[in-house]
Length: 336
Image 1: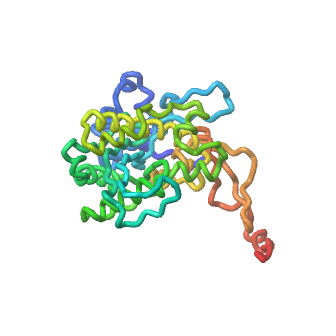
Image 2 (image 1 turned 90 degrees about the horizontal axis):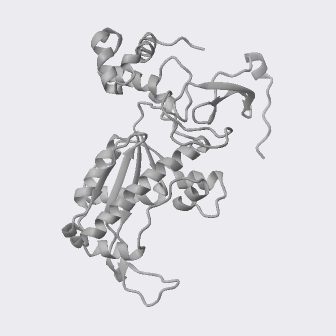
Image 3 (image 1 turned 60 degrees about the vertical axis):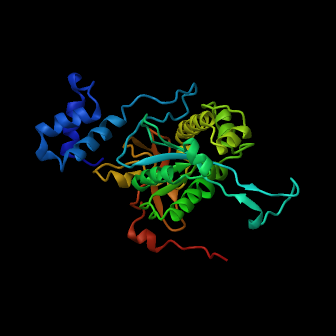
């Protein structure tokens, strides 16, 4: 196992002292940085190290009765992981029927617009949101709230959304283009719907049904389509209800993500956001890894595999188990 850095050992020493355990991460980082500024690049570097050391000691978020389940914990990394959800007004059009209709653009009376959005950073309690005023809803003017969600996406390293690949992100990108906003700085998208479809066979892949099966928090109940109709007409109470529903979706999506996290392949590599001397889980950033005695085989190579004790995901080392001589004797089967 690689040696721990001097700054990490220093932070671990502080974290073991009873009088410092009640301090927040920022308070402890200030205490450490003020007394040992020569050990860190800056205060943010000290705070990041504190979060890394403390994160793996965090309380369990979800308790399971079966000890064979891996329990996700508040393992922190410097990566900014944003969970988002948007609610949009329906497209209104003139039609001659309700089944198998081909609606032309000339039949559209009014296009969609964003009613509310909600977002939160992974493991943090604070909820960020945007909601149209009654006047904005009547005018179908979502420019103000679209600028708000653009700012968060511009900060994010990783974005989590359910059906984000086909709905939330393309919808938001369209609005960014309309309002002359630059593309947000690059981020990686985790679409939970996409990964649920790839890895499992739920009877329904809707977020509420998946959470029901997994015994997680369910969606906030509401009156159905009439709520969207009222919001469309600028009903202030309905807009408030819509935002509550939207916020609820973001909270339960965090639970869904953490429960399927180990199954997401490939998961953005969180180890790249830490880059210390330790081997780290690419899925959650934890350094609590074990070898289970099973190797990972490619078509021409063999690598030791590892299991993360924090999130349950598996990964492999980059260094091959084969010698140079052994590699030279490995043949490859023909593709056709």
